[in-house]
Length: 397
Image (tube, rainbow, N blue to C red; front, side, top):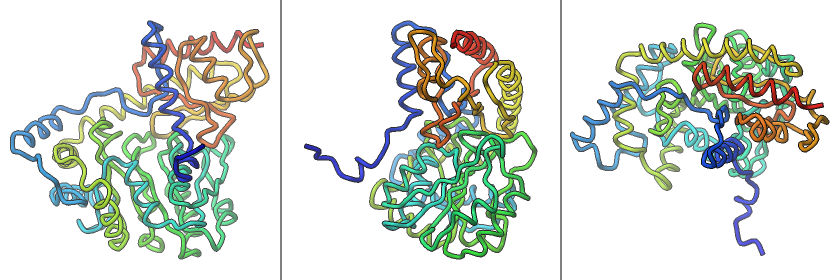
């Protein structure tokens, strides 16, 4: 007898968190596991941000904040959007939440009705379709394989839009692929969306600053669709602040008001001390952001070159984020006697148990032919992990 809600039963558990848990269990048994499954920087939060948090504690920022966040933080975000992105917003168009994850979910929950369709390009971050299902919506998946650098085309987008389409979720730079849409590519998508005024755009830009091609481009820059774009961003990736849990939306004021109404009923404003830390992140020196970006770029170059040396992997060169998403289906159907590889999850489990490297199978990202590796770890770990993976895969016949 199932007493849980239908809403919960529709959801799948997070594959990334599950794989991280399995690798931690092996580590607890004394196994030397290199974890390439987690999506968080391995750097510490910059010192000036930590100092701002300590000061906030001393100054008794210990009470409830306004639901959308302190005015000072929203002003800092408005300035960031203007200075870095050339986008004009007012503080009333900003709402802060407990991480960009909640911000994405808030946007979906205030827009999507039962039966509404939400377009999600694949490969996608594992939580997008689950959030749409939570809102009683229908995820519509557009596949984009490695041959098109994991990016959808305007023609694919046009073909997917129906009278039921309510929104599209676009993530650039992308988790899990690291692909980045250029200004020209975004202009092509914006041109299609301009013809369909009922479709909203949720633009997940959390990896904005981990970018290896120069300038980040936001789909919110196109005036013909600007008033239907909800930007989602936050401090987790750029400032190595995953555990501080501060994200935000920037969008039309009527949508932000709706998000405030929703959030006011189930979490209220995010952590007061974290908000003061985030304010310092946006208003203080950006030098640590660039230092981390350079480190990620060096690691990207290292892992791409090493993975290209592994027979059976097909690899592209990601232009942002800190993930590699090699195509690995050439190993399906192979075994080493004890282990039969039938899919990406089997391969990820094999690499964990035999190679002692934790990756995540691509099925839950909408790409069953790939696995995801995070290179948010040291150069030494990357070199050792790729050696282990190469040796483990060589045993498959």
